[in-house]
Length: 104
Length: 98
Length: 57
Image (cartoon, rainbow over all chains, first blue to last red; front, side, top):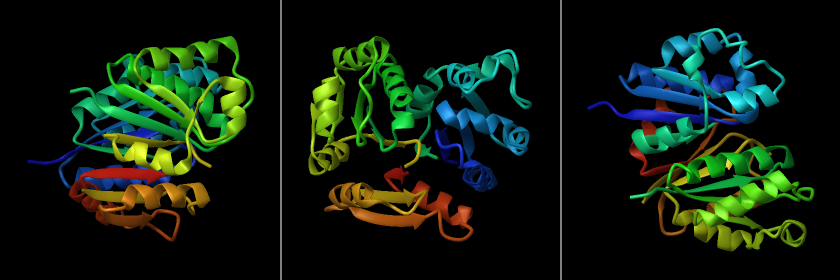
């Protein structure tokens, strides 16, 4: 059975690692969920972000953090939908529902 | 069984939101701990409330910086003790960056 | 317990101390993401082989 991985992103300099790990895990048939919070939400404007949303099984960001980074919550990043403008409950879901956990 | 999670902060810019993130897990019925390993300014009322909420939900906010314990009522801990504490955690979150 | 320590940056003194205490008595692996281009395929294999992964700052 394939293993699944949850990634919690708080570091705005980690997009290359998020992409690299997600791609490698997907290549192994794993399910991958990524949640961005605080300064990590700045990465929702990274040119690679839409590709990450295609690659991973579930991508969401903390809407409150995104707002604190100076964005309007109505300005939904390319690749996301309104329901993925989420809360810290997504971090809880990673911890509860995913076998393997990584912070980046 | 409820998971035990400890956040650790090394950069002041990440502490307040990191405490909010810890509180977010506490309300998800996890044991959420936070450890502040850098000196921060005095907490405002909102963040003092977040700290108290973490405690009320059977978590704790530690610091190895005496000034944080004096100013912000954080629970003193040494790095050695913090290391022992996080050995007991299901999840360790070195939050943000240096 | 098998613990994977991932370093996103060069570890500082606090990080080294915490790793030392956490590592004691455990079976530890260490990966530096800050040196060169990481072999993400190998890193994911190591995450899946570990009981716990700590990704230090």
